[in-house]
Length: 233
Ligand code: GLN
Image 1 (cartoon, rainbow, N blue to C red):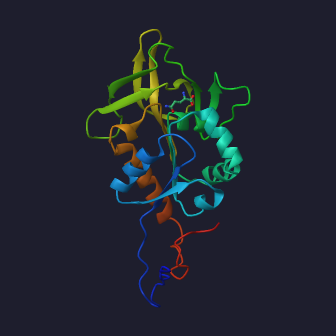
Image 2: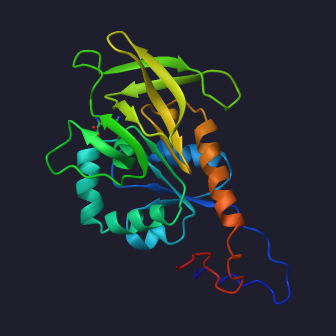
Image 3: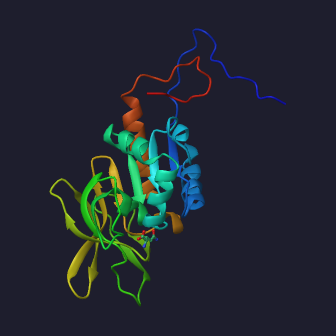
């Protein structure tokens, strides 16, 4: 029952492949992100090992626990390879703990907390108060049509400061000290303090897919003879 190797017929036109989006699958709400992306009709790959990353054009860092995720990233040997791919321009979407992992500065982290530093934000972990750890709110998304997004916050980080190159897509008001960004973007790095994957709102995943398509459109088409559709670089 071996699968037949797929080979492009010689001389056949090369069809531009839909991007493959990876979901970091070490911990957290992996299956929800996978489901969201599958609904968009793109290729989806769960990323557990460095070799899984080679075949993806963009990556989702899901919610979970950033301190646990950072330990698992190191144990899997993924920390350096993901950092290198982000530095090379791979689009990423980080939700909640994923936002913490992508920020330049993490406040109230573990003493050994590190982050990829991919978006110029200072974020404070678990900053919405001990009692009201989780809440829901409808948000307007700047520059993204389709009406308000119903956002679910679960022990979410708060954005304390935003670098000048960061675009703020959505904010919420905190009773004590005013508006805080909860969705931000810098280049092809998009982060949310909330969980779009839990409410089935695909707009931020669509943004990631569009980023991935824009990047792959500038690359040499995948070799038609290699069969696996997986690139090395
Ligand atoms: N509080 C978690 C952290 O600090 C994030 C929570 C989440 O991803 N839902 O990593």
